[in-house]
Image (cartoon, rainbow, N blue to C red; front, side):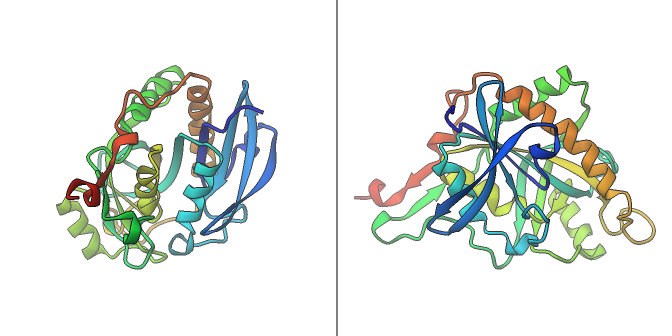
Length: 264
């Protein structure tokens, strides 16, 4: 079996996309993690269902630290993720695909870091490129090959959930510069950066956020929309994973600032 250099994090897996896979349980200090391993063109790809295969784990209950630590233990270096999002930007209508480029954090009670101080010192992580620029470049190139239209780059704002946002909150978020809103990208993107992993994410716009359209959010067609966009995204991800990726064209490996050593 080839090294696990690549992973996909999403709501449903490559095992739904005609790719044969087998199940694996990974033990971490934060808990057990269930992953599926697929062999694609001589590459071993780990797929992690963020909410569980039955989609039963709500966003604020996901064990993000265990998930990312499990992928690191498998030897993963590059991660693509998908995220269902609501749009705050009229240029990104329902059904659009966007590439996440930055984030705002409005979560309240999640463990956000692996860094606990003590003997490890005061570690911090740079966030000048939270979503790996190199992987985002590969995404845009793959989109051309697969005739996939990205509407653009998007600033993602993460809320605690599981409730949707109020109209007043959405107005505030728009003033802050957010394009899309969701409940899962933080702390996932932060933990990946702390571990020195390359991480990029595609946002599936499944609805316009509260107050962006008249009437309540309509969720009836979300399942169909997610399935259609998931297939497009997985094809792009698997295409990219057939290439030779390294970490020489980004700064993901050099994101940690160790103040303990700096002032010793």
